[in-house]
Image (cartoon, rainbow, N blue to C red):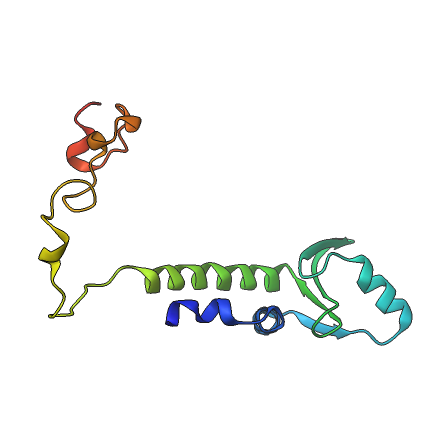
Length: 145
């Protein structure tokens, strides 16, 4: 049940959450205050970064015409902070998704038959001729190289 929660978020909620992270990384929110700004905002790709160089400075602009009707503007440091956060979050999500030990004492593993062969006794491509002699370098399976 918990696995489906992220998919239950609305698009607006995901965008708002991303924008919270942009603000935390150092991006400044610039709301639309005129029709000219609205027209300019609508020309940018929504919910994507655009890189802007002005003199010797590099800025990153994130346009949101749907949730906040605004721009988020940040310098290289803010963009780096945001990318670092994304990488840390991706690693944390991956660690959370890592398989854990199943500890249900009433589960009957024997009902599924003997635990040998593909899927039970370790990864072994020899049961599938489509793998041929391919060797990913995984321990006992790299003897062919």
